[in-house]
Length: 386
Image (cartoon, rainbow, N blue to C red; front, top):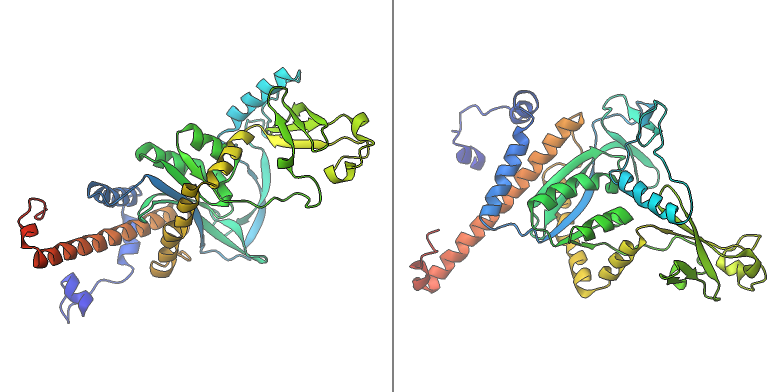
């Protein structure tokens, strides 16, 4: 009865079918309408100063696709090249030239075009745009992933929908570029999936401060750790805990620098087993060409401000995902195709932003009403009527 009264329908009036709105958005309305609705609501929030984009939180959540996980086929698909691949290749070749090595050229795929090669993927025959996602340890399902950015008040600022098997760091560039171009962002808080050299480098060079979590060391526990080696920037060498120097010998295609020790000096070292040297007595230590950016990110993580901002994730981006799945049915989707799912997700977030605006407006007007009761002078102020 409350819904009928709110919508203006009488007790005996026939109400529209529940699928009318979803059918209209899928079949009748143009594709750009969902973006216009989302932007219109977000602009309303910006104009009323409800959004604070100084701190942006970025993360992704999976949405189960409307596809049978038993109906699939294996296909060789083109692997998209990384956005930063050309810049990385130029910096790698500059280092290799200093070391007297030959330049690295772009790899050609099977069709002779420049790109990231090919790889075998599991493609759904029901919804080919979705991707196979491994949930937990054993369960596998087709899904989409909504890469989302929100501010510290929980307003969704942008979303990028991809297949469920696309890594967070791959879809990050498109979402980050949209957010950074539109808003004055100071801090960017992200999960461990975004802790890559490229993301650290790009955010720092853009004048923004990335806040990333601690990641556990995955090497051997009994050997020397990478941070136990001392770096000499003058000679571009590492010094092991026993005082032996490791020379910079080469830099490979992926940006990994290789530092090697002299076998004749390390062959008789009593700590050869602990440092992980090979049978000839040579120790190999690898770091990334953009390792200094990751070191700076690690230093920012340990600051009080960094700890405070990262702790806000559970109140912001995690709350957005929880509300979307519990209150707005975003655990799974009945739509098929990347374009349809993107429109559907964008409308969900638009509704969530609109709901936040309504709650904020109600609380603000109720607070001002209470003030007029205890302080009538406030009701005569110029800003009260607005």
